[in-house]
Image 1 (cartoon, one colour):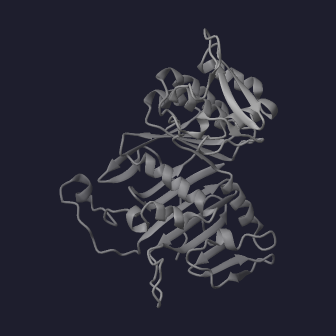
Image 2: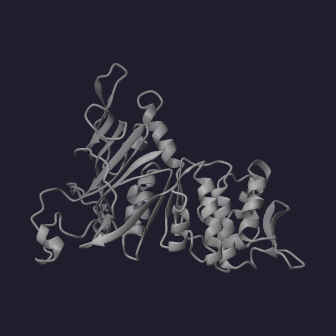
Image 3: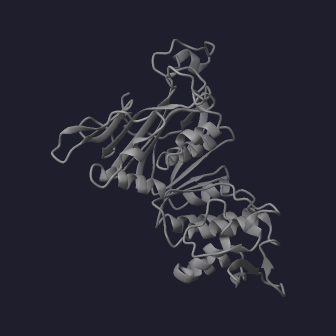
Length: 386
């Protein structure tokens, strides 16, 4: 289980270090930084797939995503007695992401590139300045077993001595991708596989032309795709190798008297929903956005292959208020199998998830443009040195 998540220099998240529980609910007003928190988590996951530079580029590059406020705040700036103003920067520009779990921790530091002597097409790409992997909750010189400073990667050998694994790692390549192997760094290989298994579900596409509203070629699908296009195959997999009884109970909890069935025609799968009072089942093309989104959430949360971490961003989108209580029960059941982070601004859902004291409630707000977590004690955290 992840115990701590740390984000520094990303949009309004100047320096946010949060504890996590089995179920963590992140809420707050519009503009408080919830979306930035969610996107920062996705960026962290992208490191394990070698996509963090490309993902930053899709957001406008480091220059567009970096914290735009002053490096530090004076007391007068915070209480409004003096105007907000920039100061002489003491530290280099940096976007830092990291987490610590019960066994391993990882952090990455991205900064502005040093222009190479010849012209480059990629001079706007951020450079990876530092990385570290350690054992335990807080990074220190005593528990780090692999670190990267500039182009050099060092790691502990089997004899406990530090050795250089690479001395020419490119600034756009993570040591997570280049040095993880069963012989030298099996821990890094294990950590990368775990991060690759994290799942993120954002706004499912349910417009009239969405693939989920049409029959799709289906194969066994223990993990619903992030866009939900393979819903019918995912539900068929749950019914065949997962908790079919629990699935039907979840549907009846939200839509009393309704049932789901899957039809297959020459390899194409289609989901049908039978509703009380109707003489024929409805296809996904006929379902409302809210009903379809709820079915997608059920398929995601009842996966036969639970991940170590699942993140839901505003799962209440398009849902009728009557569905929020069943959704909260579904989430509470799912967190018994996976660690969940739910980002939501729906007070009814937030209240329902917090009612049984099973969730850590994190309420974000902004102070002088900076996102803070109200009333949350900041865990200990150290960033790797450049």
